[in-house]
Amino acid sequence: MDVIDLRSDTVTHPTPEMRHAMATAVVGDDVYGEDPTVNRLEAEAAEMFGMEAGLFVTSGTQGNLIALLTHAPRGSEVIVGDKAHIVLYEQAGMSALGGIMPRTLPVQEDGTLLLNDIEKAIRGDNEHFPRTKLVTIENTQGTVGGVPLSPEYTRQVADLTHKHNLKLHIDGARIFNAATAYNVSPAEIIAGADSMTFCLSKGLGAPVGSILVGTKEFIKEAHRARKVLGGGMRQAGILASAGLIAIQKMSQRLHEDHANAAYFSEKLKDVPGVKVMSQHTSFVFFWLEESAKLSPSEFSARMSEHNILLSPYPGYEHKFRAVLHYWITRERIDAVVEAMKTVLG
Image (tube, rainbow, N blue to C red; front, side, top):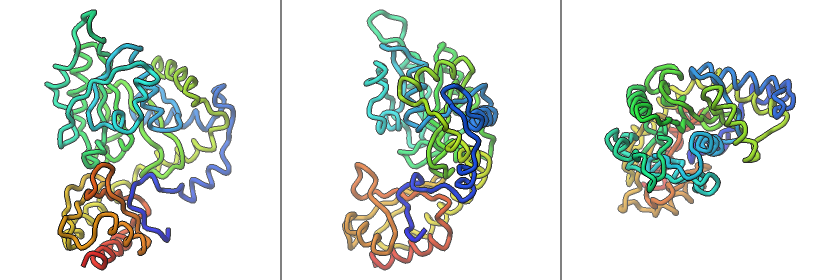
């Protein structure tokens, strides 16, 4: 690409192999369960994560909402992090459409919820209280820097929730990044969870879609929630064909993005007016210092003149997030760093 876009990995385009697969995909009516490519994608994704079944959905937000609607009846309560995507960026869907109340807990710097906080938040069976039905965690935890949660932590949360007869859902939009960071299989990184949603787009490069996985019984009910949300698609194999390449091949190269993020983070130390805040998986957060010669908006504008897109992180004027993905090579990182030195030097 002529433009070097570091704003997010959501900007990625399908690879040439994906485009060919989409053009030649065998399709059917998925609402009838007759699209063989969708069926294959759902089955392969479920097997990969050690689950019984999968459901192709339009987005991670829809997948999370379907999981919430399926696990938690109206009037119940869900325990969730206060910096979770479900809380911050999904327009209160659980409340607006599901009549579900979120009970938020502080997300720690390492992306976790404290086990003690979770246990204290679980309601007793009292007619004055909503019933706690579900705990959700996010892996990787994007808002604190793309931090991966360990398999051990996930198992601890799962054991705690199951001890109290609750369910555990994982918002795993970038779950393959977490598995890559810990060098474990997809099934290991979510072991113990009752359901999980992951994105086929972002770093995996597919143009559209996410997968929700869980038990056969859970996915059967999730089908109903998908339908009422308008997520029933017809010849969706055109999209699912790209998703197959995403999980089979693109998931295997994420270590390159992680290495490039570490490389970029190190290079940023030589840029005047910039302070590196964190680097985890494919995310680099940096701070444009007050002493910098340009304001954040001026910096973004000047970088765009070099065909480089960077923008302040929402809610933080001086905080920037750069997300590495398959477009961003070492050569492009070097070009970004040199441009930053030019505009800030």
